[in-house]
Amino acid sequence: MNILDKIVANKKEEVAAAKSKVSIKELKYYRHFTAPVASIKENLIKKKDFPVITEFKRQSPSKGIIHAGAKVAEIVPGYAKAGAAGISVLTDVQFFGGSNDDLSQARDLTDTPIIRKEFIIDPYQIYEAKAIGASAVLLIAAILEKQQAADLASLANYLGLEVLMEFHDESEAEMLNSYVDMAGINNRNLKTFEVDLQHAANMISLLPSHILPIAESGIHSADDFLFLKNAGFQGFLMGEYFMKHSDPAKACADLKAEVTGKSVTQL
Ligand SMILES: O=P(O)(O)OC[C@@H](O)[C@@H](O)c1c[nH]c2ccccc12
Image (cartoon, rainbow, N blue to C red; front, side):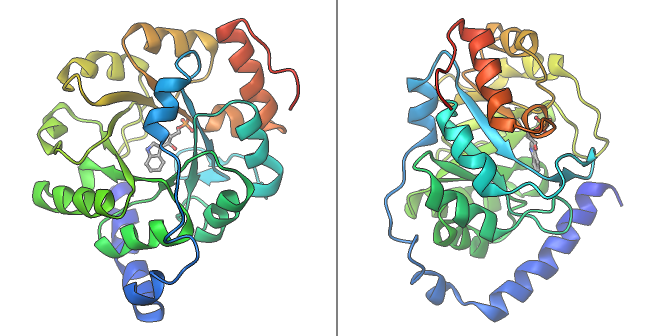
């Protein structure tokens, strides 16, 4: 079993347990469920000099501990002030050390739109994403069937959530459907952890032009950012580069200053 298979097997158990604790009907009564949320896609277009989704991530299967004990309250408001177009919050407990509570806390601390970074395999998780305060969900093509992906994306849109669909293999491009708002090309192969920035640059031409292209993973410098920007990417998802710093928001502000030539005056 590769790591992705292990994560999905564990996720099936987690979702079954969550369903038996809180029903979809109950999720609809959560205070965030009906609250309006901002659009990540619109923000990425608006902030075109620095269209970065900054990630809150304590650990990952590929990197181990990145920022032990990171606190949402100490990092997320700073990300927003540093000019993030969106914030990605890992909610997987077992492999990434995240939680639903991290996302809800983040929601209460900023109006910057938040994407739920999760291994979504069941409609329940889409309702849950809305209930905990997300603006958008990630759907990973590699772990879904085509019809299942379309059903999940359509439900997300129906609930007012944007959809970022993530691709790695060229063969996955046929998983796209009309409910997808943004397409991410992951430079990291989730089965082997191999990272190659050229991968996203090679694959971008497979995406239809109306879908906003986002480069994901392994972006570690202004040069990496500019390389992918020149390849046509209009969004950038970055985690480790910021989170490995003791002050992730400052690392974000510094990168922004480097790539735009303008510094953030006050964090
Ligand atoms: O920390 P990095 O290399 O900057 O990567 C961020 C993000 O792309 C990565 O966390 C990610 C991309 N797709 C995922 C799917 C699940 C979990 C995590 C991810």
